[in-house]
Image 1 (cartoon, protein in one colour):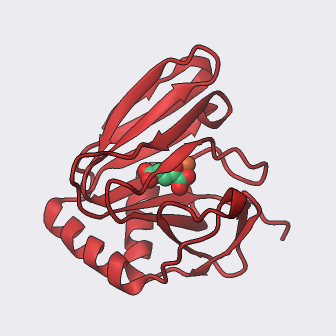
Image 2: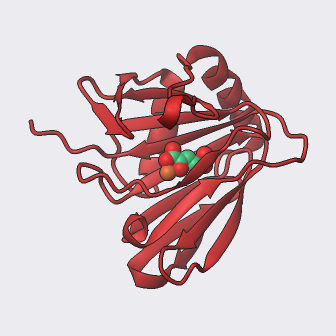
Length: 189
Ligand SMILES: O=C(O)CCC(=O)C(=O)O
Ligand SMILES: [Fe+2]
């Protein structure tokens, strides 16, 4: 596990093969075939350039960009991944899943800085390797990390306040990638 201290108090932890390859193969197939995937609307009548799914504890709703994401109950696979992650860092009650069907699917620059969101986000990737990029808001310093089959990236500290991240499109022919971001959403009960 590599721990990178970022400017202004952010921390990024990285491990390329956090989930061993054979297990990652099984998880990829289970997540692809068992989750309820949908393509949600984005701004200006567009659709998001990827599929998403939402899982977590009962009653958790994650709101972002005007969308309400109601969590379905953890699947067995997701619960296993969550426990592996929590053994490293964090405590999670919600997971947003993103499925990038090919190199044309992507995620724009953003921070996961909603007020009800805990500062530790645990991200695990399966399938095709895509580039995870981060950029400091003021200095524009940029860093890139290959997010491959079984890769763990933990974002913590003040990273969401001072840095944005994204998954760029790629012209290279790539297969599907599934990413899980485990989060802690504060509830008022
Ligand atoms: O696909 C990824 O690695 C990034 C996902 C992400 O940033 C998010 O779901 O907020
Ligand atoms: Fe994000």
